[in-house]
Length: 291
Length: 291
Image 1 (cartoon, rainbow over the protein chains, first blue to last red):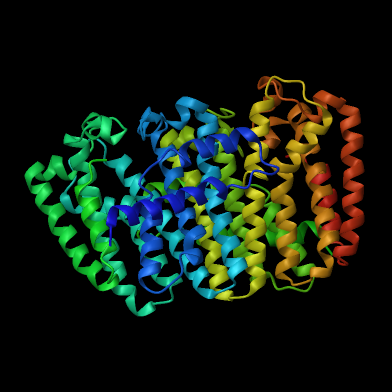
Image 2 (tube, each protein chain N blue to C red):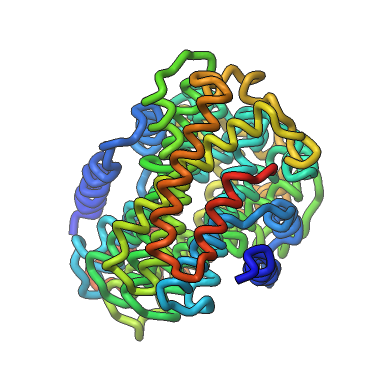
C-alpha cells in the first residue's frame, strides 16, 4: 500500500464532497462565502479521514460514511473560527490565510461558525433520515456529545479558565481529552458504528484516545519549535497567551518521548483495526507531521 | 377553558423541564452557569408552548414532545446570546437582566451560545434514539433546517446586511420569515409531526407562517412604542441600529392593521387545529402582548 497516495485520494474525496456539501439555494451569499472560506482553506482533514478509513477497514463502504465524516469537519471548522475570534485566542492567521473575522468581520465570523455547527447537524440528520438505520442515530449521538460541554466546548472553557495559571499535568490531560480528544475519538467511533462492527468498539475507542493525546502533544511541540511557514499559522501562541502546554510543564524532550509513547500505543491498536496498514501509517504520519 | 391558567401551567411545565435538562456531570461549572443564566431568565416560552399545545391538540401526549420542545427554547436562547454580542446588536439588557456577555464576558458568552445550540441537538438526538420512531427524525430535520442558513441564521445575516439601508417591504418579509418565522413555524410543525397527524401539516404550516409574521410586526411595534419596563429590554433599538422595520416602512397605524390581519388568518387556522380554544386564545394573547 502506497500510504501517501492513499491518503491523498481520501483527502481529495473529502475535499470534493466538502465543496459540494453546502446547498446554497435560498441562503444569503455572504454567509455561504464565509463558511466556505474557512471550510475549504485546506487542512489535513484528519477527522473525516479517520472516520472514513476506520469504516472502510471494518468492512463498511466509504459512501456510507462520507457525508457524515464531512459533517465532523464542519464542526471542527466552526470551532476554529470561534477560537480565533478577538474575544477568544485573537488569532489572525490560520492555514496560511487571514482568519475568518479578519476577512468577513466579527459578526459574520460568529454567524459563520454558528452556521457550520448547525449545518453539520443538518447533514447528520439528513443522512439519518435517508439511510433510516439505527446506527446513524447512534453515531450522531456520539458526535453531538463529543462536541458539547462534556467534550470540545467543555475543553475550550477549561482552556480559557486555565490561562495564566500553572495547571497540573492531570488537568492538562483532562482539558485536551475534551478539547481535541473527544472529537477525534468520536470520528474514529463513527467509523466503527457505521460499519456496524460493534465488537471493535473498545479497540477503536482506545485508538482514538491514544491518538488524540499524541496529536495534542505534537501540536504543543509544533507551537514551540515548528516552522510558521509550514504550519500556516503563528507559533509561540501558547506562550503569548500564557497557556500551560505539555512542553511548558514537561519540557521539550520529555514531551517528545510522551508523544512517541502514546503513538506507539495507538499503533498497536491500529494494527488490530486495520490489516491494510493504512491506519498504522496514518498514526506515524500524524506523529511526524510538520504542520 | 381558563386560558391564562392553562398557559401558566404549560409554561411552568416547560420551565421545570428546562431547569433539569442540562446534565451537569463532567461539564465545567462556568459554562453551565452561563447557559442557565440566559436559559432560565424567564421569557414567554412561546416556541415550546406552541409545540406542546399543537401536539396535544392533535392527540399526542405532552411527554412525547416536552424535551424536544425544550430543545427549541435552547436554540432560541443561543440566538439571543449571540445577537446581543458587542459585534452584533451590542445589547446590554435582555428580559430585565444584563445580557450574557455583560455578566460572563464575551468569550464565555460565545461559548455558552455554541453550547446551547449543540446541547439542543444532543437532546434532540437522545430523544430520537430513545423513542426510535421515524417521526422524531423528521421533526429533528425540520428544526435543524429552520435554525440554519435557510432559516434563522440566514435571516440574521440579511438583517446585518440591511442595516442602514432602505429595504423594500418584500425584503423585510423575507428577512423576518427566516429570522423569526422559520423557528416558530418549525415549532408548530414538530407538534403536528410528533402527534403523527400528517394530514394537518398544511394547516399547521399556514398557522405558523401567519403567527410568525404577526409576532414580528408586534415586536417592531413594541420596539417603537412599548414600555421598556414591561418589555425587560431597551426600546428604540431598531432606530438606533438603523434597521428597517414594519413601523419604519409602513408607519405605526398601518403596522397595527397588518398585525391584526395576519393574526386573524392565524386564528382561522387555530380553530381548525385546536378545538379546545387554547391556540385561538394564545394567538390573541401574542397579538396583544406588552412584552
